Length: 304
Image (cartoon, rainbow, N blue to C red):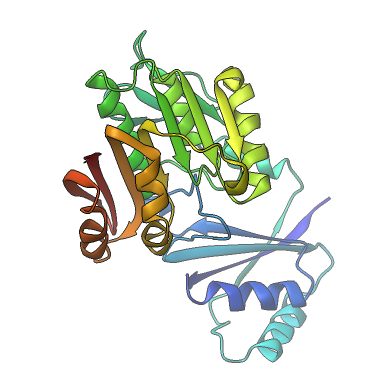
């Protein structure tokens, strides 16, 4: 059946208020898009932190209503619900029913990180540029996977790819702390790691990680745990893509997980937050360095 579609542009800060108003007036669904997608600068969100809903700075919201909904009545209701928001740029159009998720997925393309790591949506063929030694991770993009990936994840994927190129991943055990979708652990396994451990305090994240591992045929080599259930061990490779505050609070725990001479990568750090973390982790790590991608930083080092 057809629908009435409402669309508007807003900022990340305004988004909760707009979405709350749309829900209040009976929106059947609300979808968030990167406002820069048409410029080729789209950034997707592959691995949000636990409890986070990270968004783009500029967004396009689209909401669906029943086809017989009256646009002017909806607009009046929205203005009455939150008169502090700008409703003057709202657009309406009639749209036909279709497979919304499939239409969305069809626009996404594979992504390459480093020399041979590729993240490929299930609905795409492996790109021709991927060689025989390529590390292919298949993921269902859902509704938060675009033509690029969030810088925090990209920074970690490139780091893992470089470790593999140096021969430091082959046959090793890897800890992915705050594993989310499991994308980093899966990449490590595809790059030659023998076993990966995923730790996350969100049970749904562990289910998603385990499911992704099965789909990528590495389920037998990937174990997931809640933090309280994680077996105490040390690893030659540890990656933690969480938030700077959590990296600070968990510094002792993460440092204790890295074997002497082992490598660590810390991500989820906004530019400007890296200084304090470099000092914090210098207690245990040598050769600490910070790498930037947009507004985000990765810190990596070698366990003393």
